[in-house]
Image (cartoon, rainbow, N blue to C red; front, side, top):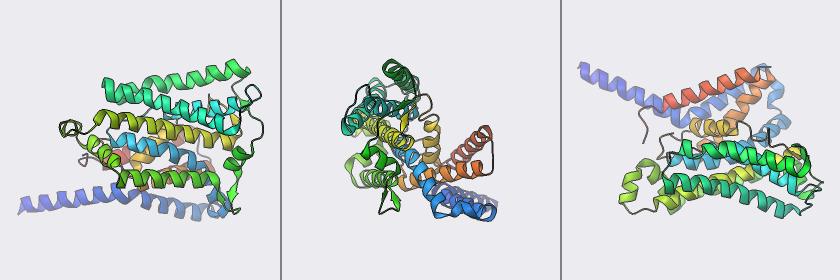
Amino acid sequence: MTEVAVARRQFDTDRVGAWIQDRGVYAAIVVLLLFNLAVNPDFLTANNLQLNLIQMAVVLVASLGMAMVIGTGGIDLSVGAVIALSNAFVAIYLSNTFQLATFPAILMALLAGSLVGLFNGVLVGVVGIQPIIATLPMFIGARAFAQFWADRQTGTIAIRYPESAFMEQLGYGKLFGRVPYSVIVALSLTAVVAFVMLRTTFGRRVVSVGDNLTASRLAGLPVRRTLVTVYVLSGLLAAVAGILATARLGQGGPSTAGLDFELNAITAVVVGGTALSGGRVRILGTFAGALFIQLLLSTLISNDVKPSLARIIQALVIIAAVYAQRGRGR
């Protein structure tokens, strides 16, 4: 009888943990909205919510790539640095120094992000280095290169580019005067990545590699190619996030652009229900996680919480999310 009671208690505990991991982020969003409605009614105005969505867009796009990487059991520390690199490339190539057209400048930024991802992917998938070590060089090097390139070309890190109709629309334009284009880009990419993960062979391979790397190799799956592709996509999506950030800021600043964004991306993915041990990718949960992080930071800022304390709270959120995953790894 006692054993039955213990087993039942363990079963109930597991069910609660599973519910928190799978749906807790949605409940947390509701709690945040209700809290802000009670404390600051202006927080839920259409303009403020729209601003939060615009600010969330950059984190969301970067988090999509991070979700795929974490789904393989890896991690990508270079996301924030790639955002800075993309930010610098777009700003520099649209500056008076180069005067490139908008789309070639954007292509250069996307290429730079993809190359960083390729470097990471080769180290992880081909050389076999642990992801946290493999992505560390670009965590440092990509931002350092962006700063060097900015200094070399303009003599200053803060770079302003001439007005570009496309970039201005991307940063501030709205479809039908209501829906920001940056949000449309972020949501469209979310839908594409969700389709890839749920409906394609590549998506199933990502999950399989994260679930059991050795078994995937023995089954004849292209493990190396899958890992390299995942990191390339992470770099590419981080570059898109950098382009969105540049369009919004109207300037380049590689010292500050994307700073700590790898932490925001990891938080969004983990809070959204994707296990750090791999074997599962929750894209809808990642979207909810990015929204939660943005609302949380906005709530803290609106209540005059110091940035250092805000980071501590974010760290506690990560700890809580990881704790909820205990025993539900792969």
